Length: 187
Image 1 (cartoon, rainbow, N blue to C red):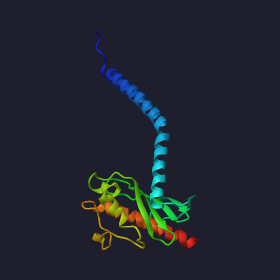
Image 2: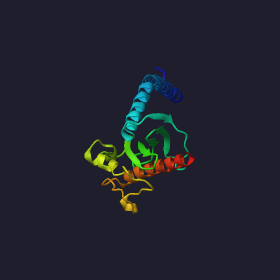
Image 3: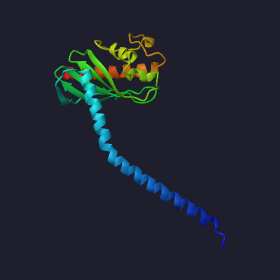
Image 4: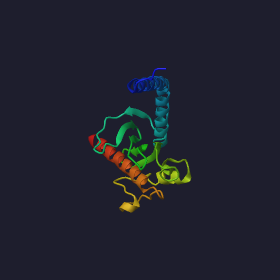
C-alpha cells in the first residue's frame, strides 16, 4: 500500500470539509428562503397588535416621516389619536423593540414591548404579561417631558436587578417623546 503524502492528505481533508460546509450552507439558505416570509409576517402582526395596545381604537393613517437625533426611533405611525413610535434602545441583552403611544399633546398613552433579549426573570420583566411587567409599563402612561429612573434622579421605578434595562426603556420613551414633539412643531 502506498503511503499518501502529507500534502495530499491535508488537501483531501480540506476538500471534504469544504464540500460538507457547502452542502450545509445551501441547506440553511434554502430553509431561510422558505421561513423568511412567515417570520416577517409574524413580526408585522406583533407590530400591529402593539399599535392597537398603545393606541386603542385609533385610526392609523400610515407611516409618518420623522427626524430623530438619538438613532433609537425606527418608525412612526400616525393616527387621529396620536402617534405609535417604534423605538429600539439597547438594553443589557441587546435591542428592546417597543412601541410607544404618544398623544398629539405629548403625553404617553401606552408602552408595548415587541421583542427583547433581556435576562429572564430580571430585565425580561419589562415585556412580561405579568403584574410586575404591566406595572412597570403603566407607570409611564400620562407622563410627558424628559423622564429618568429614580437612580438617576427621576420618577420612574426601575425593575429590581434590571436598572440597565429600565434605563434603556426610559431612553426609548424619551426618544419617542422628543420625536413626537418635533413632529408637532412642524405641524
